[in-house]
Image 1 (tube, rainbow, N blue to C red):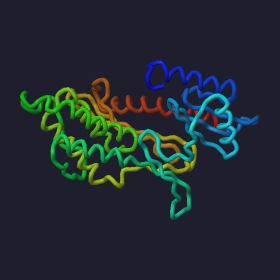
Image 2 (cartoon, rainbow, N blue to C red):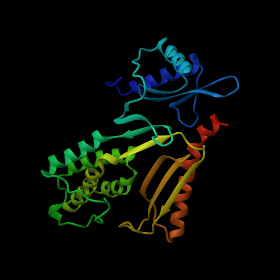
Image 3 (spheres, rainbow, N blue to C red):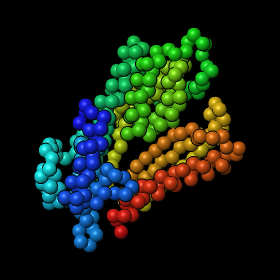
Image 4 (spheres, one colour):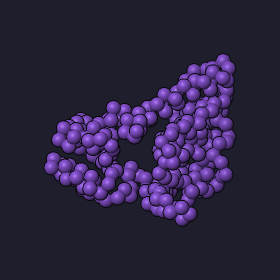
Length: 291
């Protein structure tokens, strides 16, 4: 599986054929890694989500048991029980003390500690704790020529880990991650100082970096979008969005727009159009299986 470039694809094709042909699951037209099982009335019974050779299953106890039995007829697998950890994310199943509602709390404390430790190894000192991660404003031109490419490999490593954290569980750091990644090729002391602010913020808020997943109040998706005007160094606008389904956060982003817009309204319209397409993409499996 891990020694051949084609192995993962070959396994996926074989796994998909078994799920769809032998076990009669329906593959999502939107996401090929998502599979559904329905009854004769087209009511959803089970969902299975695959990632390389891992499978996450959601359904009632009987359907999950039958699914595992069907898989065992073709593949050997290890049953790891209720979801506890996947792709570096630790999941803790809890109940809301006020309402008694079941919820899942996801954290990545190990990665936060790894980022802080990596910074200490490179800079040989503790990062200073900051309240926010947004200053100072960075530039390619800032810094003397002899200061450029300062520990470039280490800068890429630390910022790369920070990006992975932001992508999975830290929407508050999206703007800082967007800014820091633009200087992989020529980091200076100013970029390292900005990175210290971001990591110092991680250190200060380590125990509060988490996302809580609850049962959606309703199957209604929203996208909150905003954009500034020509604030980037090359006069492009910076946009951001936050998506939810039934009040539960599903996605977030901070991005420099691809082109320069002459007025702010065009900048915002462009971002709204882009996020509405993404919203439509997310709606398809929901509308297909929940009526």
